[in-house]
Image (cartoon, rainbow, N blue to C red; front, top):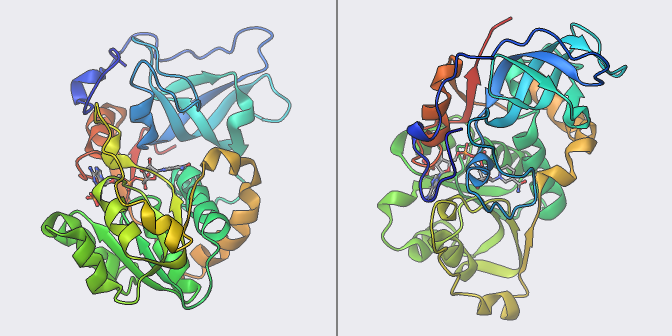
Length: 334
Ligand code: NDP
């Protein structure tokens, strides 16, 4: 990580260092682990850690001239912690480097099920999957037959939310930023309908077209104008699960939400949530997801960048919609 930023992240905000990346020895007496990183995850929250005053309270911002950190899948090479043995596969917070020493092992989880792709532990079985399950089942309180709108619907979180909603018997529409993504939503993920928000000059009218009777659940990933339009289309007792506001992360002055009156007269619940409150309970969501994956009832699309050096482009690409599906970086295949 080069230095703190304002505005949109650029590839040049990160650089590749070839010094000191291989530290094969765990310090004497350490209760941490030495890992080889296999797959790394590019997630929108990482942008928030690139600004000096990150107020999310999640991890603390990045340190200039140190590796960026984020979620990943890794293999334990050496362990000073009885919870982990050499050879274990884990997912959790790690460094964007070939090898890392991880001292905060409470955010590392052992991988027990290896009959699914390991990269899934950065996506459907990792933080984004837990986000989708928590946000849909627990925050949105869905019922069969309800109408569900998902924004950024082809991404790591959105593609799963839409499929879970379909499996529950909901009517589901998603928005995404290209024709290719809209086709995926309709033809691969089984959404009832989908639209390209970049081609709609009036988002309120677009949502009215897809939800003539209104929206029961809005799974909010983007914020800004989409949130304003969705509020105007909510039904009485509708729920808005505020997962993310990616359209706002790079703005010096976030856009205000104007249309708040319907929250009152339609008794709408708008609730923010954080995956970090649910991570430790991941096994509850695995009981739902693993059978669905194994039986082919859920599909999960990944956008795979090969090589650690592809990270800057992959991470920056989240903010222009370059990724199609969950963005991962494969560092090593073994
Ligand atoms: P995605 O895989 O969906 O990647 C981000 C996508 O956001 C892009 O592909 C792009 O898709 C869309 N996007 C980017 N900029 C804009 C913009 N200005 N307006 C509208 N859409 C935009 O990311 P995730 O699925 O990982 O994350 C989705 C959301 O969920 C994010 O807001 C993220 O911060 C949030 N999140 C929240 C968590 C929580 O604990 N609350 C945990 C994990 C994620 P397109 O081409 O369709 O525009």
